[in-house]
Image 1 (cartoon, rainbow, N blue to C red):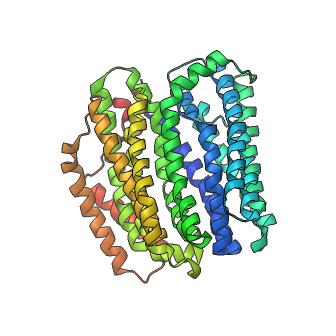
Image 2: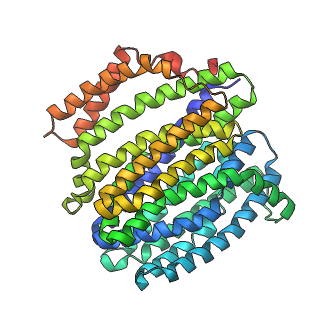
Image 3: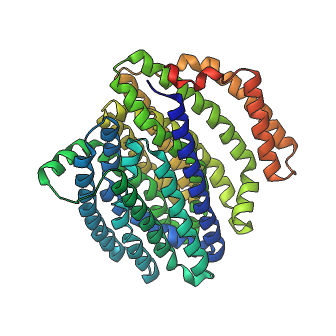
Length: 471
């Protein structure tokens, strides 16, 4: 029915692409942070934050809706042209929006120019077919796309950026990386599924927009909340504060590869299980996914806090020592958001997009209410605290809404899972603290071996947990 081989293959392919691609991207981040300096690195991230507001219109929930509909075996020849055409039109509106925002901002001509240069990438992201291949569970094309994107971006940055005044090349490299994705995905689609003919049909577009509206609202909240923080921080405390915050946040986003891998694989898989209309089968899947997340997240949180100083100094250098405490706080954002993804994906698969949007909305509201106050008094530290607080509120309402639609959260199972994970994590933490002066890489490898070995010994995860085909 649901072959374990396919599930594991998809998981491996997505994990490979999401690790190698962002790893190359992280080299770009580390390189730019060192070459451009804190102020110019902050300027780049401020421009990216404003650019994200154009992405709000560009996205509008359509890719997530497309993934779900393709996973439900809807006709791609009808959905694909409509979504692509609609996203291109929305990209144009997004470009105009951020251009007007750049003119109104009290920033220098350098920042305004960067914002407009980033804006051209809206026309490439609008043509991405990630959502289609995700719905088809053709994950190999997602992996190749990610690697091609970051490879082109990295090579361009290394060839063109050699001093602090070369920051204008960053959005150009970003655009070229995205263009590579479009060319590759279009070639694959046309070879496997036929020609893509962009045709705008108002009736079909209106129907898709109506279906995507809750997801679009949720994406607006997510993107707004994500980039509201660096934008506000830049306006209140300046580019240097944004640089410190961005350095920590981007490192956490690198760790959040696990969240992206999980979301990409889980949405079509959980959607297929919902189509079976078998609550017991769905609950078994949900319990196993929750178990994997708990065992995976806890050691990353504790290990990240302990190793924060070593990691920051290794990646960014001594100029970013203020980033250490920010990273120690923001890593808990990762620990929370991956569970938001679990219950958010479940709500979307159950066609309860509005309940998902409400949960995201409460988290965004928390961000808006607390961020100005905490940022004004505590700077980047206050911004980091707000980001974690807002995500915790989102998770709370996601759990409530999932329970309201009849989902069983399974808190009782935590009594079996948490003690084993805490036991292994505590011994892992003791090892990291005991050998605090040893090589960072060796400590990380040792921690992984100790934690995994202890879980095996206490039977935290068994072979049956990997047998999704038995469900």
